[in-house]
Image 1 (tube, rainbow, N blue to C red):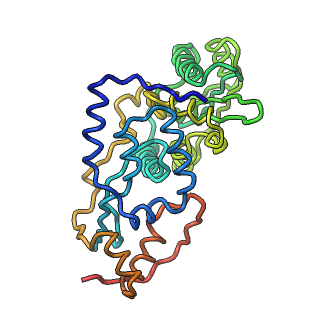
Image 2: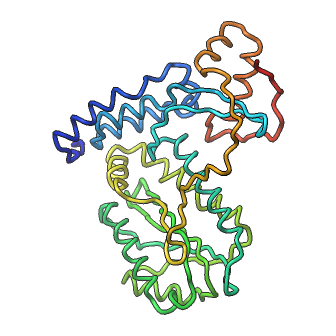
Length: 329
């Protein structure tokens, strides 16, 4: 497979090389804590990032994700938190999980508000017909058709605004991409048949849609935002060509967007007014881990608590129990 050649100027390459040395290197203890549960998958994705033409700065941020990790404690929140350098790459599972959590919280707050004009929240799914076109072209066409749909009479008459989240599935056998939009829409009643007809008119060949009422804003936020953390089918990363196409197709593409009366609502906004202000440093994670390995009982208990409460594990079901309380002076 021929590697994808990124279009970068000499100045951009020089800047990437310069800033790549700014991020402090991650210690083994920090990498182990943040990425142990998906390290093999992470190494595979890194190889795909190289083939997709990622520059030195992006790869360095990926490698050093979780460096300079500081453990803090809050008496008000009664919990620990971690502060570190994060790559914020959309293909990094822990970073994507954190991004999805913020989006879900903002979406839950929005859905908790009472709609005006007797409107209700609805869940809508729009799907394109299977195509052999490159994924980037299919994603652009999907968003373009969604814009046409919003200009249709039935949509303009019934729907006020909402948010749309992109999901892309991939079938390994047929090597076909399946991009579709998951939409949380605020508006009036919209018949399923009218939606199908309007979507077929907007696309010219697709009519598969789904529409239903949302009874729980919490469930809706979880259902929609899980696609932000997952992105695409796991099988994509096992195929070199598909993985490179997925990475390059997402460059410059927004996975979540708003429309209509929701314009201006920031899905990824972090409100500092809700933050706890009494966070106190406990120590660097690497030092705590080393002391725990050396036999320090308190540090061993602290590492156990951090692993139970904070460490990313996409396959582990969290137990709803209070870990042992530890006082660190």
